[in-house]
Image (cartoon, rainbow, N blue to C red; front, side):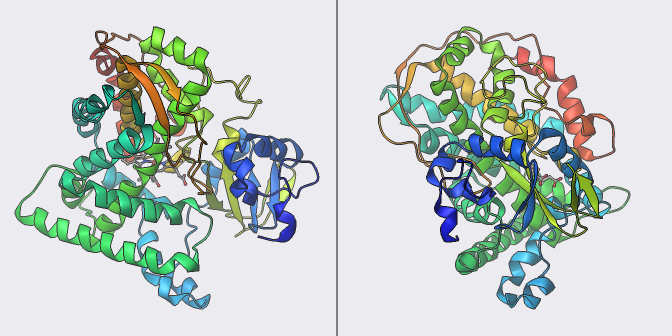
Length: 462
Ligand code: HEM
């Protein structure tokens, strides 16, 4: 970081850069920096990141809709940069759907969506409720917990193992790999200092999934791996390398983010006691509260794209091939889109936030993440009262893109669970309209179908 980058980032004299996200005061509260960017330079050339930074809601939508996702360097490009040793990382990432454009992306996502059907996600619902109860039950008597380590981290780790169809006893290992790989996904650049650790992680994950695929051939087991191995669309199947790469992106994509949804969400509710009480008084607001918490403290703050051709955006000329960072966390606080955006409102309507992205790369696991979030908040609200922060600092993880806490220690009183609620209104405002438009992507089916099943889902109670 250059010396003048040490100055306070939210003052009017400090150079505007998204790199300030690592300054302690910005890490604690990035929204003043986002506000400054949105008002002073909504389409901003960031000299430190050597990329455009886009912070208005409409511009983020435009970038996610129209710009190229093909942004990860190829092994050949790494070699040309003198970083040939990073080749295996590039090899893996270039096979992941997250970094592809149509038609390769459409094919891969279509096949993967056949494996990740609404029925499969729904089948996990009652099981997720059991997992949440099993995690929370032993903590209740103690009257205190670390929300991250006791609930928000283990829940998606166990659910991910079940979703993949591997032993849940492997979940600590899956979690450790995901945390390592999330460093690559969450930060802007491949960090050569961490190269050996990332390489080891890629090597181990690849060997693990290759082995799991081999074992599935003789002892098939319900789950994403097996479903990806058998998925067929118009005679097309996934190769072993594609299955491995996309199991890894699904495993990583589903863990850190869901942990952060629960951790950031609990913190936001405790910091907004009126909204916490409102939710306690009316648990049928939980689906809309989860959408609002995703908007308010988005687990995934930004993503990147490449400009496909010279483009005018916000009065600036973005050249073909230049990198663009779309800051969903800033778009989600844009007053042009959300009235009173810095207010947490668990009953907010018209909440089409950007937390799951937009358009063809709209989060593949959103239906599952929503179920996990809803059931975790429901259990906490039903089984505890007087939820408060333990004294001590709030420490945010030093990751530029994935916003989350290292720990969240709370105290509470145990409370007998009230009877399950019978919500009647399905909340679906967070769905991506692109997918609802019937564009042919497989996830349309998941979202459309889970919407159809919505009333049944919520009637079953939390
Ligand atoms: C609260 C939790 C989650 C958040 C906030 C989140 C956020 C996102 C975002 C913003 C994107 C789009 C990235 C881009 O356009 O560059 C995305 C894509 C993706 N997510 Fe999630 N995610 C969550 C949970 C999950 C879960 C549970 C899974 C797995 C079951 C998952 C798997 C994926 C995959 C595979 C993609 C790539 C989709 C594609 O490229 O077509 N995510 N997610």
